[in-house]
Amino acid sequence: MKVTRKTFGVLSNGQKVHLYTLKAGDLSFSVSTLGAAWTSLIVPSRKTGKEDVLLGFSTLAGYTGVNPYMGATIGRVGNRIGSGVFSLGGVTYRLFKNDGEHSLHGGFRGFDKRVWKAEAYEERDGIFVRFELESPDGDEGYPGKLKAAVSYGLSKANELIADYEAKVDAPCPVNMTNHSYFNLAGEGKGDILSHELTLHSSSYVEVGGSLIPTGKLLPVNGGPFDFRARKPVNRDFAAVEGGYDHCFTVDGEPGALRPCAEIREALSGRSMKISTTQPGVQFYTGNFLTGLPGKLGSVYNKHYGFCLETQHFPDSPNHPEFPSAVFGPDRDYHEQAVFSFSW
Image 1 (cartoon, rainbow, N blue to C red):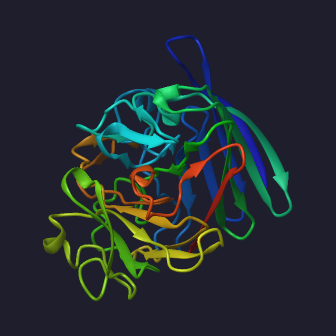
Image 2: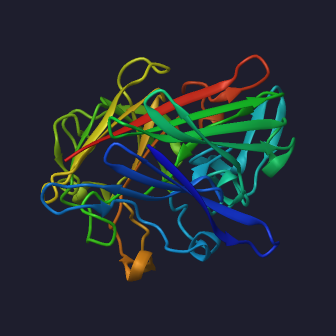
């Protein structure tokens, strides 16, 4: 196992951003202190050799510009909060609306735009980087002083492990995740439509206009949202208006690490299995990628990457029928996800 650190670049305010590269088993993984963003994941293939399976940018400039949360750690609250508003304890909190009339992925300056403190460490059969961030009371409209810690690392068993923690001194929604875009054929190698996906999900969160939940969980029951048996990502695209951007329930007991998803790319032979403690996973098929310049001359067009974001359900603060995403002095936040690779 090995870890290196280098300067990735310098922000306009003079603050340095570092890039950590971890090597363990047959994987190599890089992550930046800006946004605790995953920037590269090199995975072998017996058929096609080693490839970087994460979409992203070669330099820091790509991550400081306008981009679709490429590889970023999302917080305080991932996904959408309808109308940018929620109430707790009789108090109404108003958030920055950065997705039409709604708040998305933490608001104007979420955790993806912050520089995190970072330190590498070894633990048993893995090597990790622990990222820490403080969010003051009132940050982006959220109540309470919050301290977040995220550990990302590799195991000798070819697993990428994500561990999310937060403590907040007042009741507050917390829903952290990572927003990496994958292409198991290799970044820039075309679309992901022929990838074959299994989701351990018997229901999904129904959404209305602007992808805001209605409050209903609908059974997948053999329709276009049924991935319980492996099928190509695009088999039922015609029924979902050209792409998925939906939260699926994860079968089993929330809080327990359990199977969530498996996705395979036939030409390379690569597959990725995900386990999570979270109640849901957002499956997104890169519907809004439109000619985005990426690494080493790559251009990312529509459906050139997919996201599988383990998380609480969207707009949970406004839906008491959903698993509670409100944490506070008497309830700390702690979730995990494990991405396991084979080829």
